[in-house]
Image (cartoon, rainbow, N blue to C red):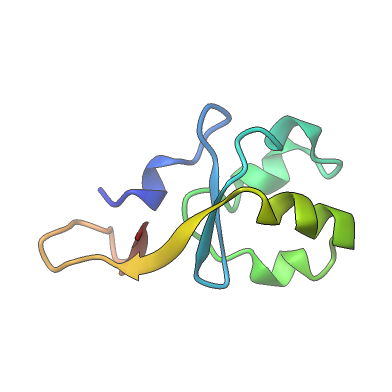
Length: 88
């Protein structure tokens, strides 16, 4: 399974936003919209559209969590139908 998809829980939560990957594990429980809203996007679905509704302060907090750019998975990796699922 691809790297990004492995991080969809409270213990390890990664978000993809405009082909960039963020480890937001430390921010999940403090999210004013609730844990569920973040976990819904954890592990892959791009959240760029959701970030448009966040404050500048919230976006700055997320920038500090940047861990890499999204990279296409190779042919030998099972991505369950989603080719964009690893980081570099």
